[in-house]
Structure formats: structure tokens, C-alpha cells
Length: 344
Image 1 (cartoon, helix red, strand yellow):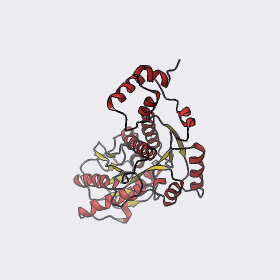
Image 2 (image 1 turned 30 degrees about the vertical axis):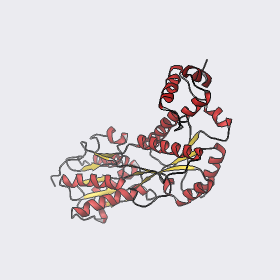
Image 3 (image 1 turned 120 degrees about the horizontal axis):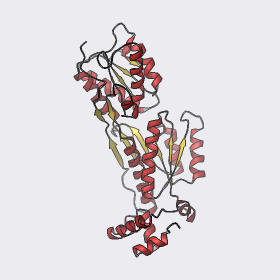
Image 4 (image 1 turned 60 degrees about the horizontal axis):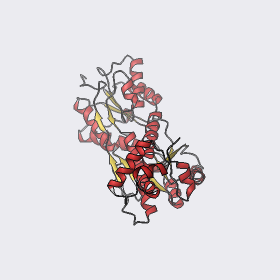
């Protein structure tokens, strides 16, 4: 038979209400009580009945993750990160893929939040950067946390997880320049994502600081896809004066650029250096492995879910809300075999 909350209370020597407070991570519980209850839960292998908790009153213990992103690796890491935090904090998770470009996206989100009786939402780009989506959620008075590209210099009125794409792209570009590359091309991701602008601007800033021109013919616009990398590299390598290095907006694009280089008999990294972004499995499944910027998507997702649950609990406690909470992540340069000093 499955253990019940009553069994946990009996073993820990506390009331059922105290066990519930520990499960819900309420701040008013003493540390020694938390320890006793936690040990009892582990000993009995107790799992809270979340459906029963949701039905027991007006409080919901279900979060939602809404996304529109073609990168399967990113989505899986996001889902796993949020789910890990939910399990640890006693929450369920509903995952909702959608089309951010849909004319009815706001109505779709309203329906989802209402029907699923969500306690809160985690939203990632491009949804987290769309004013109409933010307005809709604010009017519904539901807690939400946004994952967005940027350094947080612009004031935000909602809880955010900032990913410092600009600084990381700047670092990657400086790495390529430090290897002697001057003809450096950039292959962009989707225009609708702020990460594209942040990474492109970081690239441009590093080039300007080094006194190097950003030539229009060395900029290729596309989507966050393998196909964009193939098309972009073919076009760039077909120039009269091709680049000696390509900085791709993510690893999937970089993998496509590497594939195109092979088709054109361009040796990487001997004739062409290629760098990506995100440190997804694409960067480690290619040969040579890709220089990139490690973006801890799983950890970012966990922090977003943790921040959301903390905001929900604060609201339910009736305590005065603190100033909007923000957290920051800067992807770190990972140097691998796809980049080397140029001989050109």
C-alpha cells in the first residue's frame, strides 16, 4: 500500500497540517521540523497526491510551461528543468506547445490557464518578449516568470530570468579575433527572437572594438535551423573573398554550416573556423566538435520554476510582495576543435 500523509505525520511525530506546510515549503516551519518530516517522507517513499491537493480547495499546485521553439534539445532541457523543480516542490506541470504567430494566441493562453486552473506560468522566447502576451497574462492576474535574452539594464516589472547573450556572443567573437581571424561572418537565427539581436549586437560590438568591419555580405539572415546553416555557409563560402570564420547564432546552425563546408571540400578548422552557441548536443555530436557558449538551459528552467513557486507562495501568504525579483545567467565560452588560428 502507498504511504499516506497521515503515515508521514505519525512517523515524524507532527500534525498532518505541519507535514502539509513542509511539503508546500512554507517559510514559517522550523528547521528541525523540516528535517524530521523530510526524513519521514524519504523513509516511507511518500508522494503527495497532487490531484487531491488541487481539488481540496481553491489553491492550485499545477504550473504551466508554454513555448514556441523548433529546437527540440532546448525544449527538452526546459521541460526537464521545470519538472525537476516541480517534483521537488510538490507541483504538477502542464506543457503547452503553441504558435506564437497565431492571431488567436492570447485567447489560446486564456483558455489554457482557465481550463487547467494553473497556479502560474513559465514562458520562454518568443512568447516572453511579446507585449500582447504579457498584457493578457497581467490582466488575468496569474503569476508568471519570463525567460528572456538581455542583461536586465531595461527595467522589467515582472519576474525575469535574464540570459546575457550579448556578452557571450562578444566573448566568442573576441576568441575568433584572438585566433587572427579578420574576415568573420555571422549567420542569424529567427528575427522574432530577441536572442538573435543580442547575439548579433555582441558580435558587432566585438568587431568594432577590434577595428574590424562588419561587411553586409558576411551577414546571413535565417532561422534557428540546420538548413539555415547549410544555406548560409554555401552562400558565404561562394564569395570571391570568403570568410575565414563563421559565428552561427546557435549550434544547430553551426552544425549545418559544418555540413556545407564538407560538401564544398572546405576543411574545418584548417581552412574555416566555426563557432556556435548554446552548447546543445549538436555541438558535441559533430566532428570536429564545436566551439560554443555553454547555456545551462536545464538550470535556467529550474531557477525559473523555483522563482515562480516562491512568488505564488508569497502571494498566498498575504505578505507584502518584494520588489520584482530577477536572476541572471551568462553563457560561458567553451573552446573545442572547430576553431583554430588562421593561416589566411
